[in-house]
Amino acid sequence: MRRAATSIPSNIAEGASRKSEKEFARFLEIAMGSSFELETQIIIATELEYLTPSDAQEIIVQLNIIQKQINTLITRLRPRPKYPPPTPKS
Image (tube, rainbow, N blue to C red; front, side, top):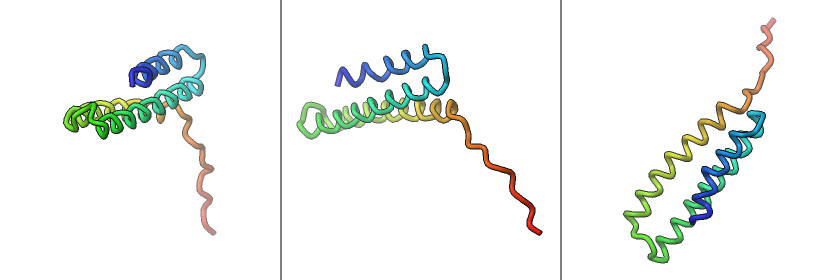
């Protein structure tokens, strides 16, 4: 869990140092994967009774906020598809 939790900001920091937005977005996607890995480990820890359900829920709520922030940043960095303008009907 520590490794996955550390991986999230580490990948964001590494991606921020890259020269292109495309590379940065790729590292954000890796950070997102680490966040889902951490979420899974929290669920497992709860089932194994290492965490109380209320503690796990509190952590997951905070983690979901981070996931939304990362997703927003990925969305803003990715180029929007360029659709051709609609053709007028005859």
